[in-house]
Image: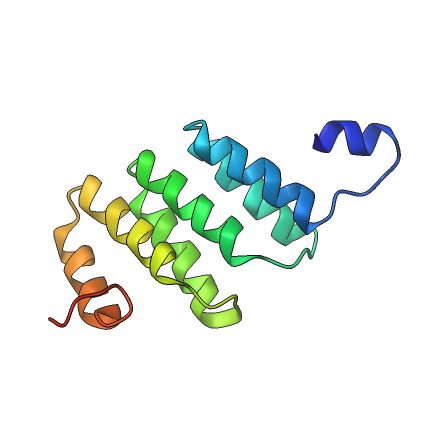
Length: 118
């Protein structure tokens, strides 16, 4: 999709980047999904919560807990605000990588938002 747009001398926008990031994430290609999310940011495109959540979920599939936490950190600092879906994806990335300390810290910090009261 992105290559096709550029071949036609059209600039991909946040929506087209988001569609490809979501597609790559759904296909288990977490590294490509994350790289594309970073490229969109480098181009100055506005991040969407859907795209960020998809990239975090892709990180969970790849056990890339540090990358997932990085996505969450950027979202908290500069937006968009993470949703419970984003937080669950990051929590899942920590759990799948056996980073229980990070998962527990995340649960303590965002407990209400991810549906826990601990």
